[in-house]
Amino acid sequence: MHIISIRKLKDFFETEPEAKVALQDWYRITKKAEWNNFSEIRQTFNSLDAVGNSRFVFNIRGNRYRLIVKVMFSIKRVYIRWVGKHLDYDKIINIKNI
Image (cartoon, rainbow, N blue to C red):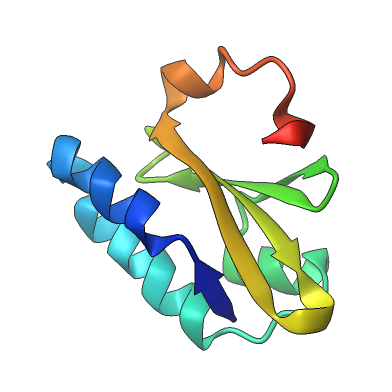
């Protein structure tokens, strides 16, 4: 998969160094993947949630952090939309538009 906006991950783990290894692992695994649907992502990351509008939420580092991405299966792209602490994720009102 081609990942767009890696900068969001790097910016986040500069302020949250405890998330760095887990986010780097997510990036490495995702970059090598060739997912075609939700089920295939779920086989790789079993704690994945689909939230609508092609958005998916990954639990990072034991659910301490959350990562929201938009996946375009047909063109093999993953757009990083948001990364943050779980507490901040709970404050998101309209996740389908992130």
